[in-house]
Length: 263
Image (tube, rainbow, N blue to C red; front, side):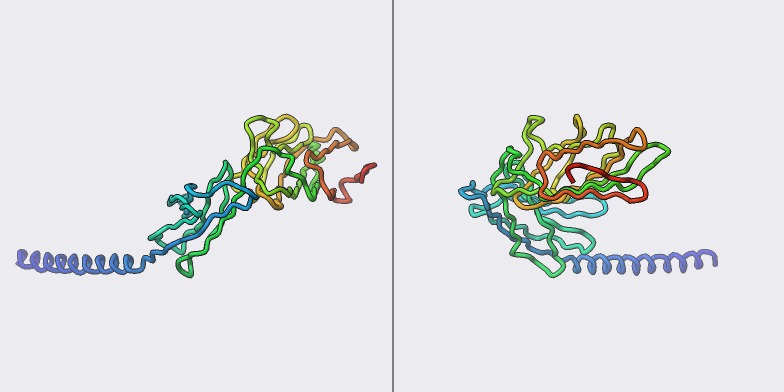
């Protein structure tokens, strides 16, 4: 009797295992059948007058998830065309295409939710290390808050940089070939935000240097910091390396009063 009971349970377990295995295979086949493979095509063009050819450039298709990037690589053809075949689409991922040209990175986000793309256009420019092509169309300085206990002021600056040439500025190897921005003496807690691709920064004497290429057009840079003040009244000397067509200075009326012979 015991032996028969074991046999029945063994058969039941065996049948359950077979059923589970079949369900698992069916589930895997269903998932596999649902994977959508797409083609992403596009073209690179050089907008610099008399610029160099864009054949043979490394092109990257970025697939970004919460676990990090997963990239596909290809090379542009004779006329700047590029293609990525059999791209598996996952609605949980973000996609983009980028190209590196003369030490500058250019890119764009792409939407694959509607299927394959054949019209991804990326414009590149010949490069220069001369920051004389950079100016500022506007500069805003906001004194956001005052900590009287620690005698510090929190400030936010917004600069709108302008490259009016037909070449992209790229950082050079020398310190004075970097984009530089001034900070008050003793500034701390520097934070930077910009949509310039691949931007990074480092503290230097009297401010910070921005490591980023700047293509033609206008680009916004925002940075915040804290700085100390010695007493109830102090003088803040502020200069703009790239000038500014418009300057705005803002502060809460109840905490800061501003005076200047130049505003």
